[in-house]
Length: 396
Image (spheres, helix red, strand yellow):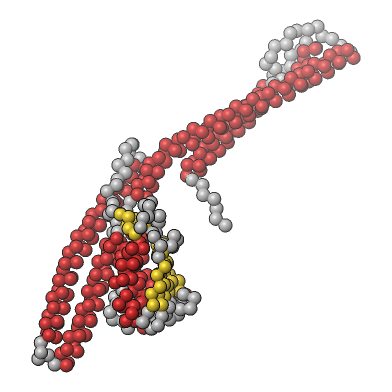
């Protein structure tokens, strides 16, 4: 059973109030003991007052009286005086206890209130740090705390946090420059290689062995291009979204299904769409890549004569189911890891780089959503994409 969450402010307030209440109780006991010791003893005071003598150690004055004999009347006077003094003593101590308890409760309530205020003021920088951390995104690291105040531990923590954000910002900027340079440096030689291979294959004097080797090199080159493109998309989505715009998810899915219709027909796969109007906030290019990877993955890893079901709903926003071989339950969660395949059959497909579903998860996370996969009841895979409400109205 999960323990109830108790904030630091509440714990500090309870500690302040508890310590004050404990100190008040100790003070009350000391005060009670001092007053109890200073009040006169009822029996001794009555006897002394009636007989006109002064007992040793008494600090109060006693009016001298004529000594009297211990007669029944004098004994009654002593008893009456003793009873009155006893009642007075009890009433005094009771009044002291009640008054002190009421004052202690009022002071404890004030101590709790002022403790809560002091704890709030003390922890305010922590709330600022937490709020800033929650607003940070991979593409927006320009926020800083810039805490003003004395050079204490909280100021040191805030300055350390700002320094960490500076280093992260420099790291992400360096990554952006690397991705831009890698996009050019890696694509260009592959494009040149593909062109040279195509020119060699177009030569009429090329023999069967050369043509076979050229076709194999073209497939390898195409797979390398897919891998590089997938890595670049993965790096871009991992950096987050610099901006968002309303995107009709149903229109994106229709576009992807039209583009992959030939591939599905060639593989003998029947695609069954069940789409409804749905608008999400995000990047249309990344969302199109997400849908494309899901549909292509469902078509590629299927059985001939199988089916692919694509559905748009409220929650999850997008669901892609397909027929195919049975997927082990313990392996379904690993399909989103880069270069991870579920079986040797998938490994044998040299046209794919093993990054399709990794990109799907990365794009979903960049849109503040999530991707989940589970085995289908009769084989295949069920992939669900959850996206937060867009806040935009949907129109046809």
